[in-house]
Length: 335
Image (cartoon, rainbow, N blue to C red; front, side):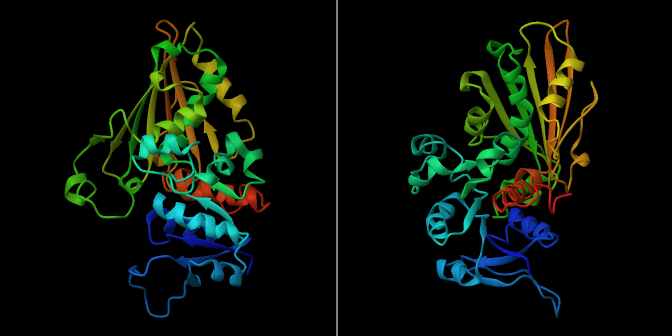
């Protein structure tokens, strides 16, 4: 049967994507974990046989021998469930925002509510393998990154580390996402008639994902402007990131910078100088693609970073993290 891994929140978009990928994983077997009494399954064909379903209880986790549990749940549910799951000896990969920030105070500031499991914040490893692989491997609690911050940090951090930027000029991240990024819960804003033939910006200057970018890119709040926008497609994120350098460089040198930083990284692909990716290039994959163009005369540059928000932005990255904490090859089940 392979290693048993539980999935809580398997009916949501990220959870369903996770189960789909795990079904193809050669070393693990997904087990569905029911945490809501009012949940309703989609209709299935007669004779359909899916993964085993068990209650989301510590007793069930111990009884089945679950090695790791994915939480595809709202952050308040993750805070409630995580301590009990960790007590069973299972490892937890949390896809919510519950453990991504460093303190309860920071969480309160951005999420406008108290954190109810602050004791776990110091040990949670931020699950961006390209930056924190060595910390992820021994961890028992992984905070899977947000979809917007994954694309942003992979694009921005190498630039910050280079020392080439004019940080006084600031960095602007113009981010566009498909509707699945808002989750499956019905709302007026994400209903068909509101989204189709439309294009809207939201959470201006106070988007909850901003502190994840700041905490992992090396930027300060005064140096970073982020705008999230909803586009009428199912999946995909495209971020157009604008920056200025202190001294003139070249597009080729920036591309070389990225190639050095991500040499050997299986899920980050860099484009030729002046070429940029689009969402179709990464749909249904765990890749983050990055392209850049730069004008030495004005010292202005643009980076385009794209990913599938349900895969590299959620389920695929969670499986990267699961592979690391279970001692499996990082790319297993994803390539």
